[in-house]
Image (cartoon, rainbow, N blue to C red):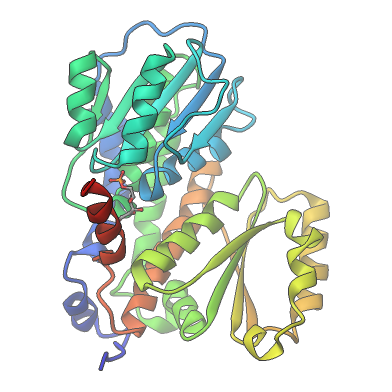
Length: 357
Ligand code: F6R
């Protein structure tokens, strides 16, 4: 029989967390500062010219950095950024494509397959990994390798997995110097950690309060296209992997054209849904209006609605403020369920079964 953990019991939270997920999360600001300096400094980049598109290929915790890159660079970069979560690459990938092959373990078969395909199509490839087969293949092929520290779960290594893509694009002249913005973001979330980390009491801790709202409910996380969409997807993944609970995500304005109609039946199940709306100051004014109308439409059908606003200065800080809040909330939700957030036995089992062939 699992026992719910009191979220104000710091030692109880640590006891459940056999793999140190909380410590890894605490290290996120440091990951970002290390990634902007040491990790990328020693990577030798060949002259890469005439890039017309960028693809980040990876899965799960290694893919979310690609979405962060896509959303963050929209309007800042002159070429499209696409995220690929598959064995095969989109048809447009060719010699004018820059492909980031990202796998924390270096052994995810979809990513290895996409890496080989990128090479075969003559794309410029950069590998980001802790080691594994991907590191071996990059060494074999003379492909630039961003070697990141091992030792945590991929989903707890977002700083290592995402920031190098920004730094490399900056070094290739595709983005301006972002060192200041990345360092400022890291400083900001370090401060935020004091408010939402495990030692901050529930009365003052937004992440702990959110976990309570989501406990024994079905979380549905809504973001906004172009701003918080990637965060909504991240919250869903973190709730799944850390709290071992279902969660779903969608975006405004699209959800106003379908999902919003599907909230009538069955009423007893709908009463179990708790919606989180991720808010940001950059929302389109019409989207703001849509959110207000939508809240009125859903208020009686569901368990409830919680809005979480981004904070901090700059696009990166605002994105990471919401990511950090959700990451902690997912760990606290795991604690409420009385489970260890670290192990993802089902993913391990699937990879093990697939490796048999
Ligand atoms: C586990 C996790 C997973 C992995 C995914 C791909 O913490 O987040 O979503 O990221 O299974 O594995 P890697 O990242 O090793 O390529």
